[in-house]
Length: 504
Image (cartoon, rainbow, N blue to C red; front, side):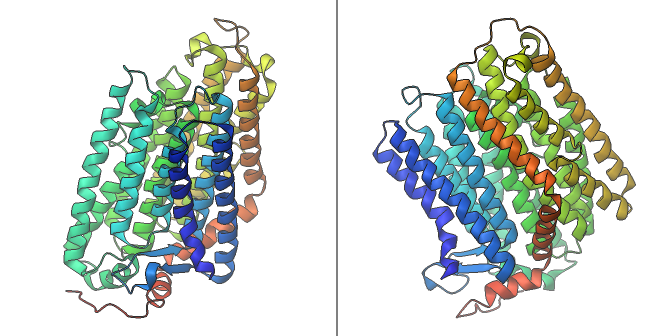
């Protein structure tokens, strides 16, 4: 019976989004309905994490269909953590957006599209086969295309073109890779693939397939040199929407890379792992250098999306159990911190009428709680102790040194210093500088937005202070992810009519 809960993270936002379309006029009641649903998803995610840690992964075969014909949903610790974080990020975006805009100024399609976007995100976390992962990406990307241009100014809409074209190219390559996979193995189910790929271990075709899939998901995650769309598209979004985009969308790509290398592909693809590690290092450095060079808060934060994704790619490429645990811990931390920093950036832009650093100042005296929230989040992003980002970066550096990757470990540590420099630019310009170019606009709406930022910063600080339990949970998730045989046994063992093996 518990496995049936896996359908709720997908079905609930879809149903609520459709209901919101039937009542298109923005109202407090409609916001309340969406808020209750999102709060329920957060609670459900926490319940799933606790249940899965105690009893193992959950498997739901929709309609009772045998593999590989039916849709299968699989919930393990990693996917349950990601479902919890997606609901939490969407809820904070909703609460912040309610303070950011009155019902009269809210676009009628914003909340339905957010719900549909969450539907695709959660399906990507829970699906057990590649084709439904493709469907999840398309649901997610269609919603994100609409949200990206929904409230953009006429001149800004063109900035969405790189996002659109690159992701369409990625989707075409993904469906082609799915066809190649089915031709090789006769199935797209992840559990069956993890078994059948063992028989092609060392085959060039398997390496080619792994490289193609890794390229697709690296594009979705924003790895160098495929991150070109990030700094152009995200700054045109309203702050509440940018928080969800910046916190979650690229992390879906990282999640699938973890699933690809940990659960599906054989673990002996050392050459591919090495490429991922060095591409991650390049992304980390180029992203942070872009952040240091920018003079707008939104642009600095957007370049840091790429930089932080680089840390995750570097750790994933090291591909030891410790490195996988560090990747998962850093991934969870970054979702919380990055989305929260975009919320703070929205208050900065509202207060000054701009987020250009040269035209800001005086916020520490005018809104000290906002300053505290930014300091906590910036310190966490830079990796200062005892913030949540410190532990993630520490474990990534340790994993590199323990595996003999001294250069990669040193690069990760040095990039943290550059991250701190870019965050200090915002702190000094927006908060410590005595005067702004124009009078500050800190109305009641800005106060409510600040309250959401403070709550988000407190949650991030709590994760850092509770590093022991968070680290243990990440290690448990990494052990499950690394156990290909256990994943396959759990999923295939739930099948009443095993599919005939067609491995070539």
